[in-house]
Length: 637
Image 1 (cartoon, rainbow, N blue to C red):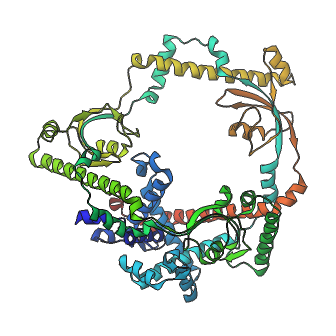
Image 2 (image 1 turned 90 degrees about the vertical axis):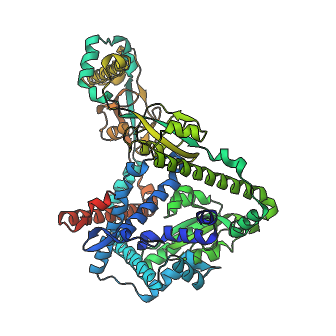
Image 3 (image 1 turned 180 degrees about the vertical axis):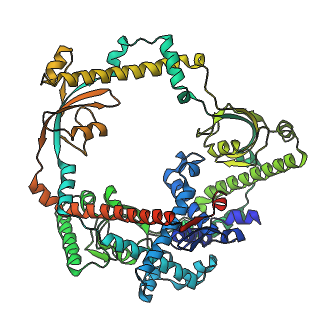
């Protein structure tokens, strides 16, 4: 039975269910198969609204998948703990329930028409541009959710959005805020500077034995080495089992039939968009203003201006930073009004203003991939390879289970087990818990986590990594310790010397700053030292400093100065003594031209900031008044 489930887990039905759960869960809570009693237990409450263990686990899984999809293979095995995903998942659910509670307090309601429209425009239930009741009932049935339960969850989702819009729509941008923001982004300054690099002072720094001992005694903890562990292990590589696998013609044909949707590739287009948002409950005047702005952009596009540049400047969507690029998508993945126009356009064609619940869209089709079918004869080898690899992996896992059960049943040592099953027994070097990888074992974060959960001499359960299966024994433990002085003396000498050189550079900077009180010209002081000053071109807070690069500390301190003033700036390069030569006044004509776009951008940022501040304040108050209760035992499970 397990084999059958494994071999069919990628069928279109289960894919649809998994996608359905992943997309809709955060909005409405649990919706997965095979619930156990534990999943109905209450892990937290806020305003007497319960959060179940099952809801929390689903939220945690969604976050886990989200970060894995973004960061792929660069995440360490213990990233869930490092990012504190357990707490993030619980906080997401607390925020959701606080918003629901607040929406009810505000008297917000969801009409029957709103609910129907919300469900019928969900891409999961749309086929050929229309709501498909069969798909709707099928997906709910597969998840054991009744229409009544799902509709209640979607009503909550709409209420949460309405509450968020209510908070955000009350936020405004003042004229002073606009001018200050424009000034921050466009004001430019020019500075003169003298750089003292730590290396200038290398020859003057002498490190004695006494210096090293004193530095060691004062900073011992900085050199503490973490606990380290060593394991011996049996490794089962699925590739070693491939010779035992035989895939017959029928299996290949069945796989092709089961995965027919994968090989019947629908028409896809790649498009860019510029979105001019229309906030919820906007006045007719604001809607008309958005439409005119959209038409103005279309006129500029027709004159030959670059779509991606205008998208970066005007679009009020997350795709703006990518020039409005939405990538490839098929019908049903975008909102219905958008789909209808996008799939009607020819390659290179730009649409008229397209109105959706989000606002006005301008769409440009970059590329079109017509629908196609991959014939079995063309992909037979590909399928056979995939099935062979899958079956080899099953064989490796089965053998790992057999070995593990033998260890548990007989209690014999790992060395004897390795000999019995003709596997090599390998030993690692020492590794600590913070390492991402054990030398010689790629992506071994899970192995490291498991090793640090064992007692000395204990045998692990089976650990699956990307390259196969591991069973290991904890061989040795090196407790956390501070290494003796003699073993790290060269390292101490280097650290101490670098620190002393930096201190010498800073003292020299202070000395120069004092001299500038009487000698007004920085270049005169520099000449006496046999050095030269440099002058930057004009730069803004958002730009790179000419001749220096990006240095936020330098920029922040430089913009605080008045013309002719001096200061010291510590940086990775050394110590700068800087003098402000001048400031360019902002161009008020440019401000007037940029005002509307800047106001829209600031409004989005400010609304999000206010919303996040509001919800955090609600959480803080709820904790203070003990309105949030958490089952710590269940949470730490």
